[in-house]
Length: 105
Image (cartoon, rainbow, N blue to C red; front, side, top):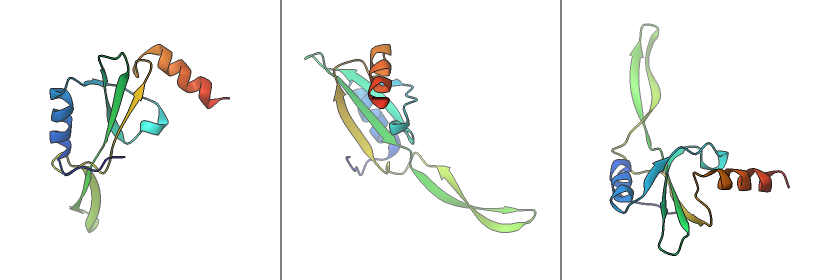
């Protein structure tokens, strides 16, 4: 896990600038963040997941308040960033099958 002082938006911009592309990842180990991938010259794929940062906002309601509400805050630093490599495309079917094959062994 990598911690960072960049905002969520700046971390995403840095990944995009380096050639990483967004992909939807339904695998439970990556819930709580957004996923990006990039194939390197050696053929390996790098997979980065950037955790969603939240702030507490206080709201008033007709029934009273103030009440704390957790809201996504892209100006804050992500709580975590993970980067690891794969031999297969993280968004591809082969990787999906590999993940579930290992899950049920």
